[in-house]
Amino acid sequence: MANSKRDLFLKRRLRVRNKLKREAGSKPRLSVHRSNKNISVQLIDDVQGVTLAAASSLEKDLGVVGKNNVEAAAKVGAVIAERAKAKGVEACYFDRGGFLFHGKVKALAEAAREGGLKF
Image (cartoon, rainbow, N blue to C red):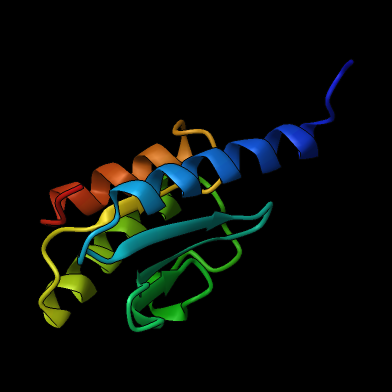
């Protein structure tokens, strides 16, 4: 049986989220969403159910509006690291969802690590 790309994506997303739930402690979760035109990331506290910080390529001050490439992802990663530091968050879990850790998602993660986030 051949699985569609969507089915494989959903299976991957469930596998990643379930693994995070098993390991989750008091650290927040850095959740990434990638569409065809933009990339966004949220720092979520699952215990309280609130978003601590967010960044997206839709923000005009980043200068990458409507772009979804590796450079835009790196800028978004640097911004989320800066905003997380401002909120006092130094460590988190990286939730890539069903997206492969390659290309844009990897660039975002590396930029966030360089900005001081630990995951």
